[in-house]
Amino acid sequence: MGSFPAGRSGREEVRIGMATLEEKHARLVEILRECGSVCIGYSGGVDSVFLAKVAVDVLGPENVLAVTGRSATYPTVQLEMALACVRQFGIPHEQIETDEMSDPNYVANPANRCYFCKTELWSKLTALAAARGYAVVLDGSNADDAGDHRPGMRAAQELGVRSPLLEAGLTKAEIRELSRRLGLPTWDQPSAPCLASRLPYGLSVTPERLRQVEAAEEAMRRRGFREFRVRHHGDAARIEVAPAEMERAIAQAGALARELRDVGFERVLLDVEGYRRGALNEGLPLVRLQAVR
Amino acid sequence: MMDVAARIAAVERLLRERGIEGAVVRAAGHESEIAAVEAPRESATVLAALAPEIKALGFRYVALELIPDEA
Image (cartoon, rainbow over all chains, first blue to last red; front, side, top):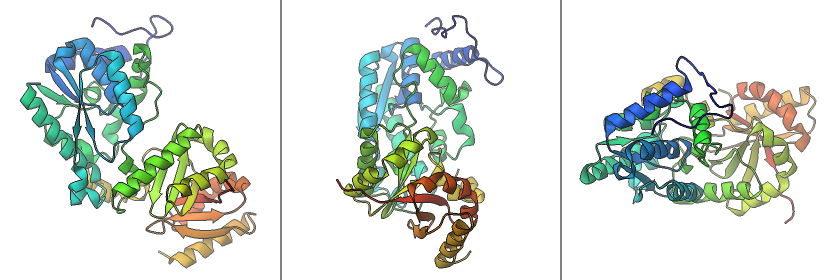
């Protein structure tokens, strides 16, 4: 791969932080070449689709395997996007089953829940990569994730998983821009973390609760909402929608309440502050966050 | 921290003082962490502006209780 497509204005230069977007992209290409052959944790989200596409372009499909870990926490809508992208861009792909739900540490839903889930995922992926002869296992963490509460990143580090997007200094906004230039359908896709992220810490993760969240969010999508979360608070669903969609949510309040009750919630609540990333971390004392990183 | 009933009473008092008459507040969530306000839908913007003050009374989230319509 010689260069990536230019922006709308031809030789447009996007400078964010110290390095330009072009420089960061070049660094990503360099990192992938150093790796030689790669096995990528592939969720079908913005980051992993971009990483898999660039890896195939740089290393060739024979040196890339994208692997999706499936379990009750993985949304079906996300799998559909993941499969559409591998078909469209010729990305070698496999699915494996992960079994985090059998780990009581995970099910108890502590603030470092992601550590237990990612330990399960990366253990399976590193074993698969070793068996198939792939040199390095990669994840799609980006530069924005470095300052966030991400206990799952510790599991990746412990198992030798590399994060080339983060290493290259690429932020989410920059990955979206590069994805747009590459024609990836994920470029403006809202972030879609696993379904367990909708349960507040301390509320146990059960298949039934995950099914409720998935069904409730599907009902929201059918009503045209794009950027939102349905948070599970036991008997209550707390809806967060993006500020631009708040007025519509209020207008459809009665229907939303009915449809979310139909999936098993006794109460339906609309958060007046709207959608914000990591809202369930708001209740964690800083000292607790630092302890579980 | 105040008990749940006291926190609810404090929020209802605050809402009355800020002109939201007749609002009913209930706690929700497995740790009673949500101030769920039953009030006219049009109150959402005012509630959003008051959210920091409501949270300071001991809640983590502030939400409008949605009442289902007929199918």
